[in-house]
Image 1: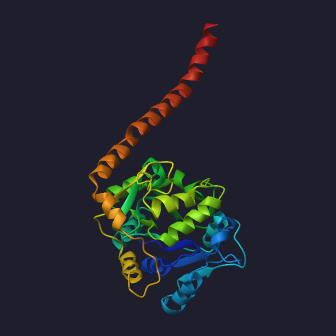
Image 2: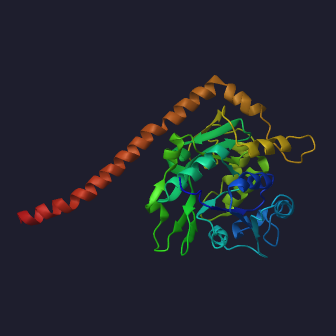
Length: 347
């Protein structure tokens, strides 16, 4: 096997507590460098300081980690006075500083099993032609014991584009979706792209704790409600009615125009996430954890379990109809030129 490639991890973060220290610890053994870009975009005005920074102790934690837990000088902290124009600019800020063979984008609430990260690095070493890697995700909700599934996730949103080949002349162009071009301007996903479904067959996925904590969910929804690209003005309403209170249990995912339901999770978690969960559950912790009694009662209900089965199964015929419509349009597009030629020939 070839030498393991070097990895530049890139993070953008605003109000990353309590995750940030544990995320850095999880990445550190595999990193050539970890480049963290801290700050806010204009849509995050209400959850940032007047100077465009985190309102919690994210910056202090970053500098403390740099001083106490960075013996190999891997962590770079990038910030500015004032707001970033958009997340594209923030992502480009870490990409411009990347020196690894691959660029691995990570959000502060995303974790991987160490064995899975090692397996991915082994794949890259064994096959240098790989240009991009995407991961299927499992989205945790309220506690590590629960996850949410939804039509939205099943229709492609569960696949996250996270890992890209990197080199001289490569450019990070957009954050939504994450897109990197090579020195000739080619999208790396047009090359040798490892899809999330392929990795899932090998047991590799991303553990996404995006709906774990009330603080985190409320801040995300405040941002989504103001971000023009999201077009989710009702995001805060969802947070209060469907997350803090289970008022719409069949719309448990935050993209709530699609049905989504809760399930118990029986598997393992990445070790740094478990360490974080233990620490924030301590009596002296100031971190708010969502109560679980209503979740347990819901998941114990046979009526909810039956309704969940019907709701989630209904997505299959809907997807089949979408596929048939797409194939019909493709068939018509292919056949129309031939029909026109036949008509002209007959005339």
